[in-house]
Image 1 (cartoon, rainbow, N blue to C red):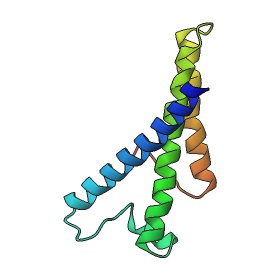
Image 2: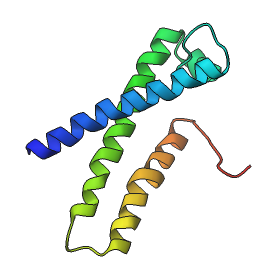
Image 3: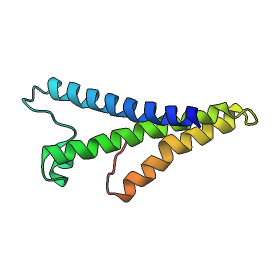
Image 4: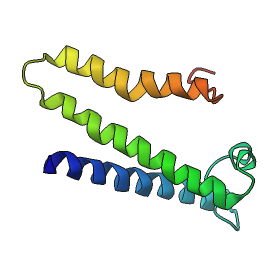
Length: 111
């Protein structure tokens, strides 16, 4: 139980840290004089930059949590590497992608 709690905390903190750092680097890259947590369209959905940043922190935490906990799949010794990889792929890619379509966020990896 302690290891699971530790993975949860590492995932939340790590996801928030990486998400914030990427958004901060992008804000610097585009020479913005303010912190932009995401696209203008995303910020407009939440009314102001502060609300968008709060929602971004929640999303970044959930992303970190999913990746941190999904890594435990590779500790199951009775499964083969192919099964572990397929289940990990479903959890980390297909499920979040299907959820993003439900909330109206459509992205395309192939242009």
